[in-house]
Length: 372
Image 1: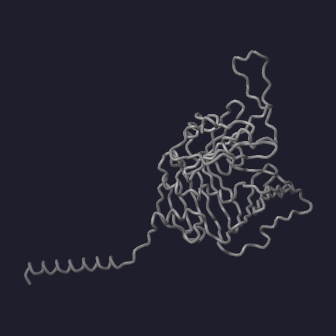
Image 2 (image 1 turned 30 degrees about the vertical axis):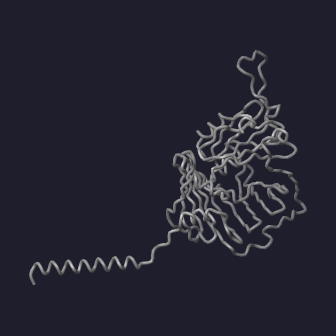
Image 3 (image 1 turned 135 degrees about the vertical axis):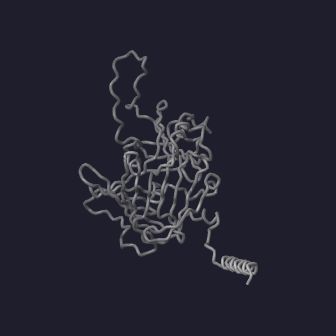
C-alpha cells in the first residue's frame, strides 16, 4: 500500500470516528437546566406539610465569628422555636409557639409566659430575610443564576445566586430543596463582597410526624402568664399624625429599585412607633421612629449660658424598644443601622444595604406630607 493510500485510509477512519462521536453526543441525555422562570418559582412560598430540625446561624464580623442554634417544629399554620442565649446568671432558654390565635413567648428561667394575641410579630420564616411575595419586582432588580448542586442535611439542593443590579445591595446564595422550595441554607454577602451571615439546617426532617403536644400552649399552674396587646397595623400616611401623635419623617431619596411599601403602627397603649417599609422585592429597608421622651432631653447647644446641665436620664423601661449594637436583634441578625434625632423624634434606619445608602436616606428625611 502506497503512502498516499495509507493517508487516505487514515483520513476516512478519522472522519467516521468523528461522525460517530458526534452522533453519540447528540443521542446522550442532556442535563436538565431549569428555565429562568422555574428558578424564580423556587423562591416562592415553600410547600410542606411538616418541618422540624436544628438551624445554625453563623455571624461573621471583623473580630471573628459566632454561631447560635435554634430548634424548629412547624406545620402549615403553627410553629415552635426554641433557642438559648448567654446570660451572666447562666444560659437562658426562650421558646415561642405561634398559632392562628397568637404568639406565646415562654421564659422557663423566670417561669413566665407572655402572650401576644392576634399579633403579627416576626415568625421563623423571617429568618431567611428574603421576600417571597414580590418576585415580579425582584426580577427587575436582581439576576438569579443556578451556580451548582449540593446536599444540605442529606437533602439534594440547587444552589442559586441572587446578584443585585445595584452595588449597594447584598448578594445572596440560596440552597433550595426543589420538591418543597424550602431554603435549607442561605449565605448573605455584604455589598463589599464579605460573607456576613450563614443560616443552615444542620438537621432537618420534612413531612414526617411531629412530636405529640409540641404546640401545646397550656401554662403550668406555678407559672405567671401575661397578656401583651402588641399591635402592628397599616396606617394611611395622611392620617399618621392622628394615630401616632406626631408627624412621621420619611426619606425623599431612595436607593435604585426601592419603593415605599407602607407605613405601620407598632406598639400598645404605653408607647407608639412608626415603621415605614421600603423594598426592592428581596431586601427590606426599615425606618423606625418614635417621640423622644421628655425626660430624655438632648443636651443644650454650645451657646447655652445657663447652669451646667444634668446628665440625661435613661429612657423609661416601658418606653419604645431600643435599637443598637447591643440589642438582641442586632446580636442575632446583624445589619447596618443609622440613627438620627431630629427635633423630638428619633429615627432608626435598619437594613443589610450599604451604610452609604442609609446615610443618604437619613439625610433626606422630611415630614411625611412633604415626603409623599
